[in-house]
Image 1: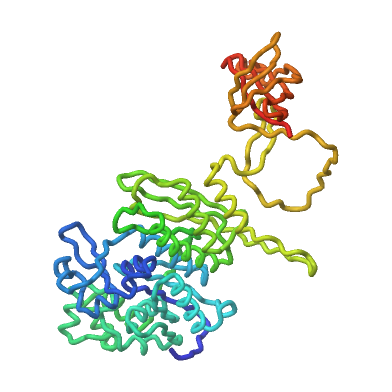
Image 2: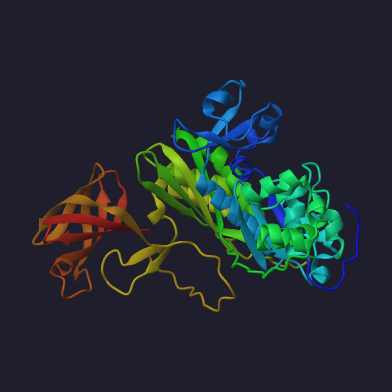
Length: 508
């Protein structure tokens, strides 16, 4: 790659990922990248090789071979083609390209990913074309893919240069006006040419783009028609093009299909860790953090199992996300073997707190998330959070809400008046109570006999006058002496509908 100076005008960068079906699958399987792998496509038993990695090509494997022919080469990893995995990888590549230019055009090619970026006027943001091409390729490498980048002042010339690059050449930048010289040594195979025209040109002895460009235009059009004019313009790098940009979405999703149904959580998290790393890299490219991650497990035999994990503060700490997902999936198992895993993340803005010089260091928010996740795994998700009072007198009269990080300063005044604290008994415990003239006189509670010393009440428990079931309760506050010389301060309800007594709380 040599440094060059571009003239003012159009400027395009072509991003090409060869053997895309193989690279899309292996980017989430780092343990297979150093092994020979082939991708089979089609209906069995007529499956053929549609893509392969470099190690398999060095062994002599070629496209179009059947599974039986591949087996003769020995230990080669055979993987089925996954359209969903390729779609997720394509979205990630378009997202990466969109970060370098707002105008991106996707070219549909078989077994390769190819898109063109209009980088006209981006020198002030990314520097010279050589620097932009290097940065773009490095960003793609972070996604686990190997790509080639060609920069030219002509749209079609950049595509042909990318297709004609040798495997060892990563970047090529052609100055404006030098497209014809750069395209001349390329083979005719880089052109989208029909079989009939290819046969005709082969009979004429035309093998390179330079030979095609040297033919007389009038005679070429007379024999091949307008297709001859189009092919010669592409060979000389003068073919005009109407750029058709697409809308590049920003969607943080990763998909992985398993070779066989998996029911081991530890093995599942090993693959989820690689997917999480890719989501974190893609979010960090946009200066975001992950605010929530939804894992969708496709079960063997049909059905899905979805779980969403969201820490208190958006973070890109992969170990924290793995721990939270581990605790959540351990507390809520899928219930069946897993055949496919999908991760969807919501981006969030990382919060930075500027501390004073002598301010104490704040605790890490990740430790709170892990602690709450462990407690929720023991007592349940609905029993962890903060109690919020409801606008009712109905027992229990409150509900649980998740903890939230407060924003701003609070001006609530704290009262210093001491009140009795009631500890709720959840769920309420049934009691066997002895009545004396309609008032409680004694009861058994947790294996001990208690004698009621003072009974206050009754009060109607409830607050919805239209609900007879709720208003059919009476509340008593009791002070009782136990047979073990302990004193109990409690609150009991008499349910006339259920015809039972319930201990609902204890006073401290």
